[in-house]
Length: 334
Image 1 (cartoon, rainbow, N blue to C red):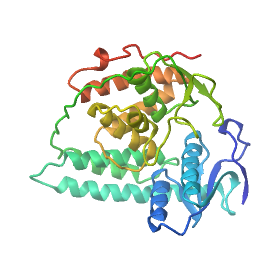
Image 2 (cartoon, one colour; image 1 turned 90 degrees about the vertical axis):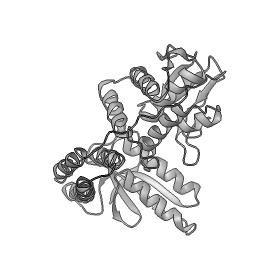
Image 3 (cartoon, rainbow, N blue to C red; image 1 turned 30 degrees about the vertical axis):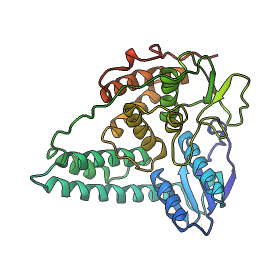
Image 4 (cartoon, rainbow, N blue to C red; image 1 turned 30 degrees about the horizontal axis):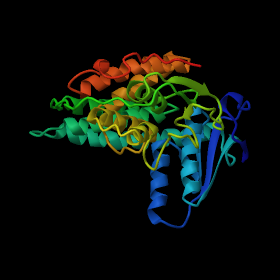
């Protein structure tokens, strides 16, 4: 196996297509092994040995593996993340085939569940269809090499969707604003769902005069007046099983149910653990993915994402956020 220490994706050596997570889990507690296995399944990693998992080398894969590595080390285990040109004598084509086989198995499982829902009569099936739609979106997002089973799964879900009964939209209360103002908030560049949503939350409900900086290193040391979020060792980041958005809600005492609902969506997209299974999650994930593809700059992603989150908050609450604090959410970079 040819591997080397992980470097930023932009600096990846030619031919180093793969990321490896090499880990040794602690003997106790027993449930931790299952927890890590489920997390690896959620991010789409493929096992090539009992303690070695592989993903295609991308920014998202590097972030996902680093979070798993940190969780393993925090529990008393050992873990490393490496780039690899080839894996244990396997060719690139053989590794791709492993990914397609794993996705095909997941598509087949989803198709079977969808067929069962499609046969149901005389009961509410909207919740189950929403769960399957969320699951399909997760599999598709991890289908890096075009597994053949996708078409059958989509067809089965379409049949189940025709059996769906309309659900009810939740009605919730508006939020209250925070008191902190005028800080510079620092996060990693290449923002995705948790950082986009956290920036919106900060500007809308915590610090209406916030400025944002996007840095390329995890080791950024904050200057006076700066607060870091969604970075390693940040003042506001993942806490236990909470994503950064949820941590901000807890730390600033934001108890609005509409924000809680958004937090559940952000959690499931970011943490990939299927904790909440909200029906809206798959759609929000696709919209955020579209924003990321279309917007190259972090400030543009935050600005565009804020518009989506304003509308989402308005859908969950009895009134829109326009009447709340921080009506102008356009990000300002220092």
